Length: 506
Figure 1: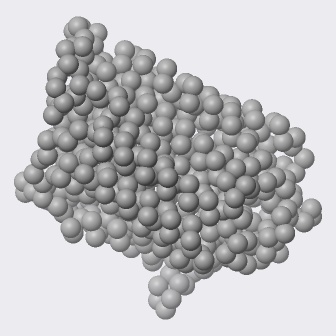
Figure 2 (figure 1 turned 120 degrees about the vertical axis):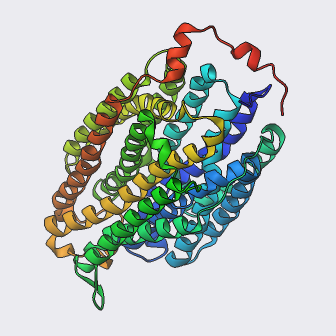
Figure 3 (figure 1 turned 180 degrees about the horizontal axis):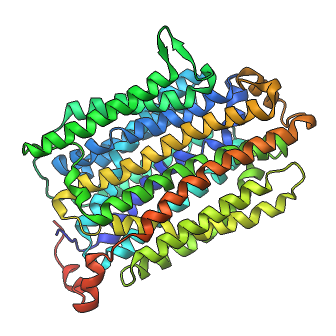
């Protein structure tokens, strides 16, 4: 264990950059209608702006966690921060949707270098009996970023233009770089080999799967090119991902060092926690898309007005997460996580039922508040229970796996809800079947024509049911959490935190 004399300034320094990259997973949702208008594109292309970022973010996480172990989490975090900040500038300067998508891919690669290092540093500089509070801050940051992203995005889009949701990252990135350079210690590195074949298999498999899901409706779930169909791509993606898992198992069995250390999944909480966080990633990415389109295209709200409906979520989540973080050092996090996920499912079902043309706007504040309570109970407990028992040597790999599963859930959520939105629009509004340019053109004038309100609202409400259903799997996983070893030790042994925190900074 590598506790340092002043772990909290180090954590706060990392959290600034972590907050920034997580905001970029959701900040685009509120700007989608304006990006469609500004870049003269359609709904499917604009959703790729989010999906491309999430895909480029998710695939490298397994190896970037290992790179942090090998070369030091501080060094890799700073490199990723520079890549992310410069790519943000590129995003804001993009003049076509293709260029914006390419810039988002590079931005995602920078985010992938940064994310695993935050959890790895927490695991290595905080003693087990104080790690809950640190994870509470990490969880509060993750939860708040997902919720604040659309609010900040709305203010920037209305005040300065959609480009500024990316430009704002530049000064934040510079500040984060200075703070990390000053406060984060250099930690001991560990020698690792790198599984290049595993990276290729996981990248190709994920791309085929996500492309097939998201583009399925565009091709009417039929032929993409020649003999290649949508279902061929999805099937190929699943087969390649199965080969990836088999290759990882073979590599580990032969004594090699796999990209995905399957041995970590022998820990019950690690397996269940990764399942739970996958459903959370899916849900928090999928849910805002139909809601924002409803707010802006049916109800005629501005990006700021639609984002302000999420304020109860952000306030309650930010207030509750630190309190919950302190409690999970002493109480089994299972009860917090399962309760939060159940509350989230109720809030999503409530939101879905409200998506009609005549619902008073103020009523959406109520399920928003319920979602804030849910988020305050989810992020810290799930992350803490998942990685609490990992030894320092596996901190980078474990945090890489955890963040990968969260991002895999997010990219699948983005792709799946895009496909479902298009399918439900085709069913509810046959005149907009295909939803491509017709949908984009309908939204460019502001609100949709009144005669389309009922069908569009029904399509969005039905789309919200998808993340509500997926989160049920997360509830089941959380209910099966075992009591973490560190919590059991706390009950029988005196705290050693005061002594460990006096150790000199390495």
